[in-house]
Image 1 (cartoon, rainbow, N blue to C red):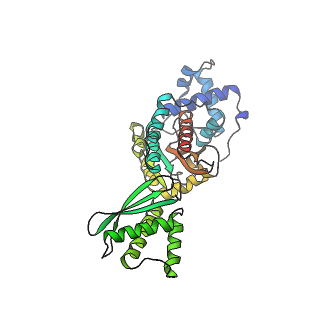
Image 2: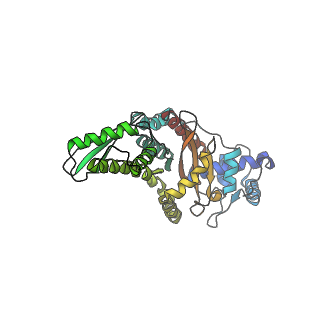
Image 3: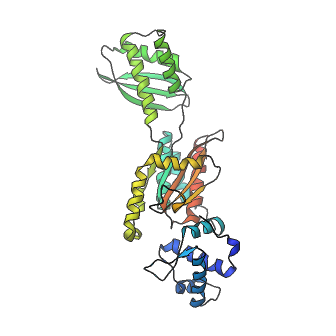
Length: 347
């Protein structure tokens, strides 16, 4: 997509173009010359404004829907506005507090990410998205708490102090002493390793018949590691919140686009691949409409910012998905702030 350089627009064209875009982003409706003449302070008549808008249309920055005499920005026009004319507004204190609230409650990292994304979704009136960092936590201790004769609660404690519980089915013949034996073995042998490393070590020891475990205790250790490893591999790489925000009174005439967008949001793996492009960057990325193939049919925009771990590595991406007419000046700084807040959480 070829973008007209802003330097090619004279002052009159820039002023008219800015008013058209800002008015369109606020209402979602095409903007007519009479509306611009009432908003403008540069003293042009509606006829003169129409001529300027016609010039902007010929440059590919504005378009005229067949149902209206007004104009609306094209995707190229929105890109020019976002990159060269937009004046960003920092999040208010109330918005900052709303984003920080869920994170400050503690709990699992995924819960904090989900809470921050839900807050971002509500404030931006878009769907909030976040890529969950693929962290391989180091193990510290295992435990098994009997629930009944057939099941036990498997407890995993990480080096970072995190605690997670899962219900595991017990093999036949397991006694409380065998539960303790299996837990002690796992804690002694696998402390300081990741789940993947623990599984690989257990496989080697079993193949060489070097374990001190036999029978039901050995099977319990295998089941426990398999349960945790499978759980880690199947965790969602993407959390999406606030899809309902995409359906409001402004979408009544555009239901097919919204339906297409909601279908695209169901394909989380595809969205995750799109966001991986933001993992390599250090700044917020903005995709407008057909600039990305995934959302070319729904004509949606994506704003995504990377967040980092304590050592400065990019570990995930947070952002929003919404219509191309979203309030970029307000939403972009909001996404930036959410990414900064999540980076503090990861330290």
